Image: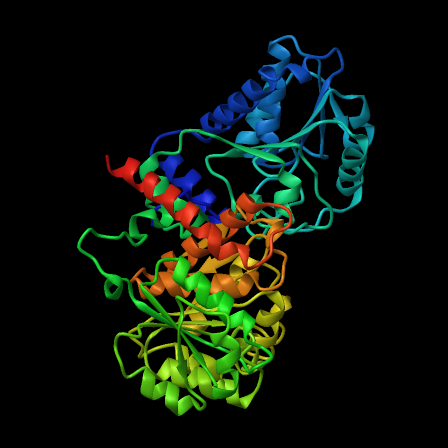
Length: 508
């Protein structure tokens, strides 16, 4: 699995343990972390001030990193204050604390407003409880002080795996992540608390990091660029697949046309919009390159899909909610084509995720991609014991997407500002180029079509979904203010051109 690894806390502990077992003492890793952070501080002109640098140290290894930073900064002549949680730390952190020769203030005595910089070394990736009491009070004072804050590894109070706030959390302007970024750096609200994130190399061997089974990555072209479809000199449109998109009724046709346009602009050689006879004239008035076929009943769609040339299907945008839509979904899935289910196709199975999973799971040769936003996800999985009676009971978007993908045997795109793409085999990607300009009607319909267009060209489902999410957001960012969903497909050629150039550079 290519791409930047985003290890969860258990993986980071494994990295540390295996590195120590291979001969690198834990205190050495701690000193490397402290050196990297101290170097970052010393290089920043804005923090050269007669006011002290306040280092807040917790009871664990994160606090140990803080003691190393304090010792190194003091050795460089900087004014440093250390404030720490009660009690003496253990393990390697005790060694680092013993090397600090200055005073140690209580948390209550710390004055973040008087400091040039606050170094947050209270709690790192091992945090397993909500912050409360004196620690929570200090976090509130730090956040209210207006003083610059640099967090070590992850802002204290942010869950490194989910990005959620544990009671209260530090709002940092900078975070120095140790060895790798974590999911909590990309998932909201952690992303808002982390500020600018830089990664410090503390000497974890590449073989340990790459071989530890981490299955979460940041969604970026490195993840899927090698499998992005390319047009050969001798190719023709039939080599690039034929995507089918289902339209809603006469008053609800626009969403499907947006999806169809997305599929075509994503590179599908042919796209057909399946429409009822009643909606035919409405769709025909708006389409040129996209073809039309009339199907008034799901059985007619089944007959159409006996033609193997139709190799990808997208349905759900403005399809309508209810039993009829369920029959359309069944017809598409029983044809065993690469299928994207969005919007109404998912809501038509509200509270009956098992019935949908029976259609999408074992026994299929072709992949299925589900593209719910939070509301659709909650409606679909409501009452399912596999995911919990209430999907909101699992707060982590990453965990929810993974569970849903495994449950449904399908790739799940859990949409949002930090979209999570999860495969049935446990792989997951967190998107980080999301754009606020995508908050416009119809943008999700375009995304469903782009995924279908890439699937039609033979791209694997996880990679196709990840690529589509990234390109979709890149197009929105490129357009900027005033974006409407109709603009998105028209920006895809520029994005694909840039990606083709990037791919060419990688292979030369």
